[in-house]
Length: 273
Image 1 (cartoon, rainbow, N blue to C red):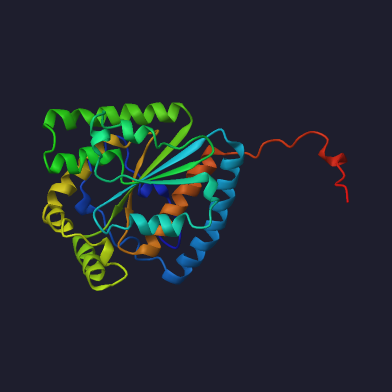
Image 2 (cartoon, helix red, strand yellow):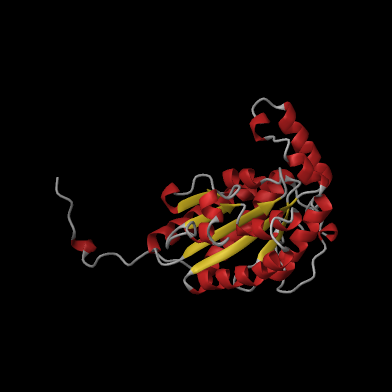
């Protein structure tokens, strides 16, 4: 990719493709000019708004956006930057935190299915059902035979959503270990950001390699034609926003939502004084 010659295939994981995250450059495309790319992203945001308006008005399809990343990977920032200014009636953000006792009393997809987007909506998952093959795997919260079965269960779940009219696009926001350290230090030193910092993040950081291995298997096993994974270079936030916005526009264009046909006879309507 250079000079905005964008091809989403460069970031998309093909079904069954072996993945080694160390081979993905978290810095992104060095040929992109920061100012020009940020200006282009603003223009693209107007296009995203128009497509979302059509999706909401049509009310026949939905879009599910899954965001996964290591701590400080930029999930919140992506949501704030990419989806700002869209019609809030048609956008629902769901953060998935530690499961509640009620959620743990059900199958792992129970809490997720309830939050999938209704027709006409864009649903955004800040973390997702993939935590059940990531943190659950790394911390050995269930036996291996349980979490290994979940890859196929997730694929079947997403296929069912796709067949019911929900398009799915999944983004792994790829930052380097050094970049994560810088962001965690910034959080620790900023009064406005300290609330985001948790000492529980540190043991997770110590198991970086284990998480990379878990993510690599997720990307290999669960990137499908109907629910693809994209590895987004996320060290540079402006590139991250550009890539995500471009892929969302491409996805919505392929969905091709249309405004409903107007009521017949509107050309003869006269608004009374």
